Length: 577
Image (cartoon, rainbow, N blue to C red):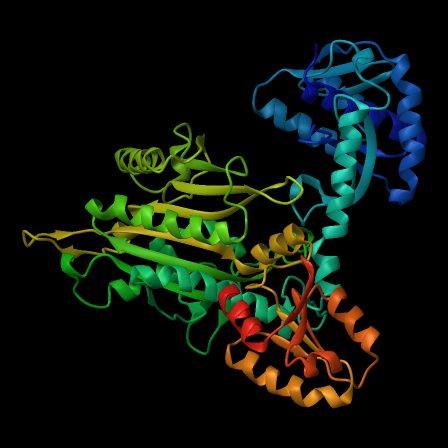
């Protein structure tokens, strides 16, 4: 029995044949399997393909499928391969690369369709259920992912073992569309984009800013237990900083350049090199360590416009960032502290549950040491330290080689959201290399100079990306502490407003985010507005409430809670904070 990946790859061939049947002048490029199906990148020339055209291509695929049997491999000489694809510059480019690597050129045929391919297909096409796949959408894609190249049309398909699995996945997609942070962000008035400002540069409204501040405040509240120190750094730097840190070679094409009157600067794409210079600003002793620097600040990366996606991929990134400088003997203690902060924060979000998260120990790929800074022995020491900590903390971890940062191994926390999508969020990264590159040192007990260890940490990480995930996970129904408006205060009529105003002052004194919805508008409209905005609690004040010296409390999640005294209400909200 063939694997699902082989079925998906075979369906990419079927898609290509169907496209050529409907659009004979189309030029095929590449068509791999994906985690949920397959796609094919196609140059349609002067024709324009949209999602509305997919049903006729899918119909053609299902018409062809019964006529195909198995895939037959055919080896070609360079001359034969070039002749076959003489009118397709994309395939010719691939052929020349295969030749340059000294590899065999193979074509695969099923039915009348022949394509350049390495293989990996089903044994027989009758293994594929006609109802197990569906064309999904179209998108633009640059040839070879390079924006300097031609823009192609990518045709996506979904494919699973059977119709039941396909339908389940489509239902998940439908849920994802309803939860899309771009849709909900607009409906809830959280953020916007402006053509005059530029793509990938989000503008946060008062409500969106309230959520961002609540997230940072909560992280700081948790980590303040561990004697952290806030620092503040500029948004630009001389390129020399990143050349020393090692970031220049890796990120130079993603930097925004700033030309001053006398010097060239770049917008910072990360904060760690700046933080090293705070450590280096004066002599340090082992008695001062660990030093735990934290900061919430923006960094900037010149992402390609085609890769921008709402808040999930932006050019201005607010990092919940932190760097700990410690002795080697303090690594165990410091990493465990950071893990405890991550656990506390994600427990508040309801994500830190057994079976709902896993941990990736992201190590370097020993087969490609040139991608990483530092000696092999340093990496082995760092990786062994993280493995021991993961075991001590009983973390559900797996080791993934090739997923490390270029300067050190990581512990990455992976969480499932409300509809089962896995998201990488909190991370702790161990770095022996950057302190050495900057010549950082402290005086140890014996009077010798030693290099500190640097531990990078992100709890929420990029606030923009975190917020995109949180909006979709909660579908806009944020927990009380995070909600942009925590309480809607609704007096029924004008004569109830004096009591409402007094309560409004008391709520504000508790730093509760309250929307005072006065009686200028219809009472029913105000209730509807509060519900549409997904406010966690409504306080309603009417004649009966004033007579009883109470207010009526309603919860978004629990429904009617009945009349409560003002003291009870204030106590409840103080506890929920």
